[in-house]
Every structure is written in C-alpha cells, then in structure tokens.
Image 1 (cartoon, rainbow, N blue to C red):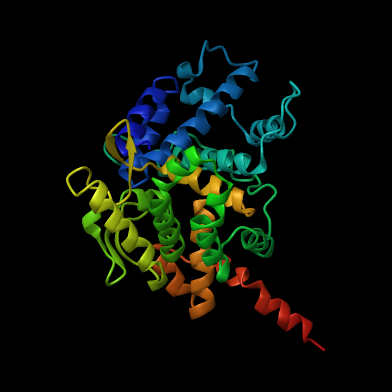
Image 2 (spheres, rainbow, N blue to C red):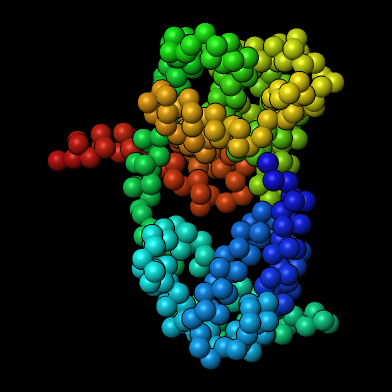
Length: 356
C-alpha cells in the first residue's frame, strides 16, 4: 500500500515535470488539509491536460510543459476546455474513449486549479492576488453521464451482501468452496481461511474502508464490546467504530488463530499475512484481490467498497436515519449518505404497487 510519505515524494517528482505555478497550487492545497493521495491524483490529471494543451496549441512555443508560464495559461479559454473534452470522448487517433467518470475527475481537477489561479491565490504577503483574470472552467458542464440516485442504488443493490446473503456466503466460504479445491490448493487456502472470514465479516459489520481496516492495530479492537478505537478516517479524523455483534465469532476465531500462530510480537497489525517466513501487515491490494476472487467464485462479484455499502444500507433500513449512517460510516457530510435512502428500493416499490 502506498503510504502518505510515498504520495508526497511521488508528487514532488511529478511537479518537476509540470509548470512551476502548479507547485504553489499543490502547497496551498496540502496546507489547506487536502490528502496527499488526492493531490497526487490531481497532479496526474493536470499533467495529462498540460501535455494535451502543449500538443494542440499552435501559438505555444515551449519545448515541454515545465516551461509553461502563467501568461501561457491565460490562452486557455472555455473553447480550449471543450476541445479537450472532445478529445477524450472521441480520440483522433482511434484509441478507446476515456470513461465519463474519468472525464469528470479530470474536469474537477482543472476546476480546482483554475479557481485557485483566479480566486484563492495570494501574494508572498498573503494578500489576495489573482494570477488570471478569467476562469475558463466557469461555464463548463460537469458530471458527464451522471446517473440518478435511483440508478446508482439499483447498481449497488446488485453488489451488496445484505440479509442472509452474507451468512450464506461465509458458510459457503467455510464449506462448499473447499470442495472445489485440489488437496494442495486446499492446504494453502486453510492457512488464510479464518483470517479471510474475519475480514469479510468486519467489512460488512462495520462499514470500514479498506484503508481503515488494514491500519487497525491488534490493541485497537475490543471484541467483547464490538468496538475499534483509533481508527483514522478519511481526512485524518480519528474515530471509534462500532461493529455488529454477529461478526464477533469470526473475529474471535481469528484472534485465537493469530495468537497461536503469530503472537503479538511478530507484527502490531490486527490482520497480517505470512510471506517467506516473515509476518507483514496485510495490504489494501491484498484485501481487494481477496474480496474479488472469492465473491466472483460465489457468483456475486463485488468490492470492499460495496461491502461498505452493505453496512450502510442495512443500518439505514434498521434506523431510517441518514445521520446515524453518516456518523457510523465516518462521513463528514450527508451528501454521500443519501444514496442509502434510495438503496432501500423494496419498500418504495411496494408502496408504488399499492398506489390507486
């Protein structure tokens, strides 16, 4: 898993290839609390745009984008942005079009950059100072191909493991799946079976993000009270997370197995993996691959984030409270949480059927 330090180091390398003004923008956003991972993605998006801009602007006379000056950026207008969007939707070289979600992400990066250049930037004395007079992003349409909340909820419902489905899956993982394995594969599988069941159960029972789950320390979890302390949420917010009681036996089995096979001294992480005789904290990518592999074999392929949606959907059904779901998921606003209002489609569809 890429660490915060690595994202910062990678960003500094990327900035060397970009217009000098982007470093001031980067420093401003980091100082304002933006996550290094988010800003690294933003820099990649800006780098992609500047490359396109240099290659498609005849009036420019720069050898590479690192030579772009603020006066060069003043040449960018709404027509430039629209041409850039067109180049992504219908590439002239016949390559595959860029997905609409990716276009949205790139446009959001450009919007933030040009807003800083025209509104948020300051001079060395911290007085307001606009580098550009006009913001070319003001009249640009965002959210290409956006779907309704109802459509998003329908897509979520096809991927979540709510109700008995989660228990059926865990039972299958512990029994029927083993019957499909060769003796050698079964031996390897049984080395991680208890841990994997604990990870699945905790993701569904708590709504944790994968990054939050892999960073849990062994001393942070209290399986009797069903709480996890010192969870670092998105935005570096510390939280205490409550999880559903049904996950207790799966986690208890893992804690016992972990103590017998690894002990507390091997690694401080709650979830660990063994490689070449050494014990490591399990990584985000390992969890993502594991979830994909076993849910695909089960016939309902999903992702850890959809397991988070499972928790949010079930909690909303139980409480009918967006605020409760928002707080349990560690979200700072209710904008992302509102999807769970629409996710409970059965209740709404039954009401529609009864309309006279």
